[in-house]
Amino acid sequence: MKKTLSIILIIIIIIFCINYNNIKNAVLKNIYKIDYSEYVEKYSKEYEVDKYLIYATIKAESNFNQYAKSSQGALGLMQLLYSTAEEVAPKAGINVTEYSIYDAEININLGTKLLSILLKKYENTGLALAAYNAGSGNVDNWLSKGTLKNDGSDLENIPFKETNNYVRKILRDYEIYLEIYNN
Image (cartoon, rainbow, N blue to C red; front, side, top):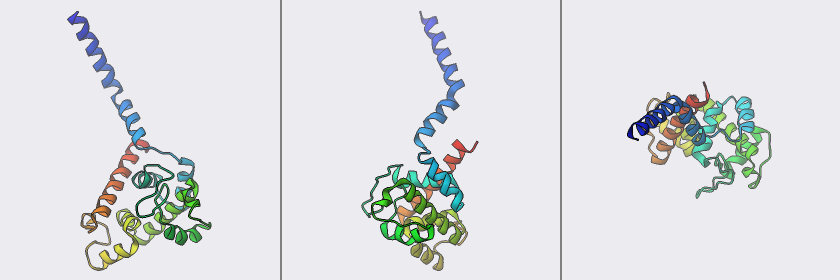
């Protein structure tokens, strides 16, 4: 009986080892979703923003909850303030209302357009993400005071703890998305 159990246990361990990468990938793909891919793909190409950066941003902002609303009033998948959405909408060639921000396509369009603007302005992903979270005014201030370098090599010096953690989380998740899906 013990010999049979040992053999069964060895077989189970071998099967697990053989399938470990498949199991790991399946678990990671469940955690690192690519929901709303039709809109992410579309606006990723249109605004030249890496689709995996968009997914990582959505994951951090709303964890793919289309109807998310923050305590600060940020709305939808990419957690846009209505005032920000109003500012970005003409640059994206669309009209926006407080209710339409919850529409997945509109939200991803505006959030990706905003990321695109920030990536062009700062020429650094970490600085762009800091501006997405804390606002361009804060990032510009940190750069002018020397708190941060223009090349983003000292992102650990972001003075707002929430923004510091936010940037680290998205950059980490971005790398994980690349590892999982960009094979």
